[in-house]
Length: 298
Image (cartoon, rainbow, N blue to C red; front, side, top):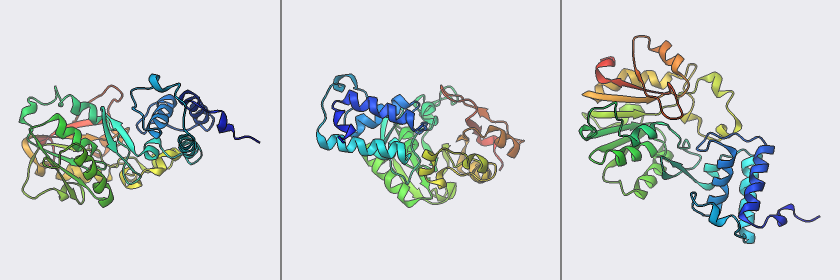
């Protein structure tokens, strides 16, 4: 019997095959891509080391045998093992920027990136006043890097508990030539930050998925580190620690930007006395909140 892959000759052929296989195996997206089509295009183009924004010129290009082998392997791992595409091609794109990723870090997809690209306007008065930023639970370092790029006058301290995550974050920082402005610190939440330092802006995308939701996550999400996802019974375990300590690390006019996903109801139940400002993005509502230093417990 002939190899069915032998009839797949061009990029167009392999893209059609990838889409068909993903639909047949009912893969889940949402880890950097929003549709099966986008996921398949990303997988095919980056497996072949082609630019992600130039599909049409390559559709009828014929593939070499070793390229076909790599594509076949990646499509099988995507569909049969449910490995996210970002891990297969070892990169993710967020707000137009490329980041290295591996299975030690959450795949970059935070909608906080959209707010950073807008310099948090109109929610802060003057972006030039942002001189010191902390990114807590930095993972791949993507938000720390985007913050440094959006606020070029600021220094950024980024923390994470995972040593392997910080190694990858450092590689991403080096890729953007930001090693003089973005510094990494290993440790627990805010406690890993340099002593006696206060910040104009603290960003945090903590583990916030509640226990029930963790048990229902699609297989793709099981490949991501649970340390970066699981937030306890109500998703608020680490958020409680952060809220309790944040004011001590903020300037008098400083703000905390906190991502909590679909846990708004749990946040409000856990912190009934707080009145955050919810920052909606193009794709999210009540996923991200802002609290000023004066609103936080002292």
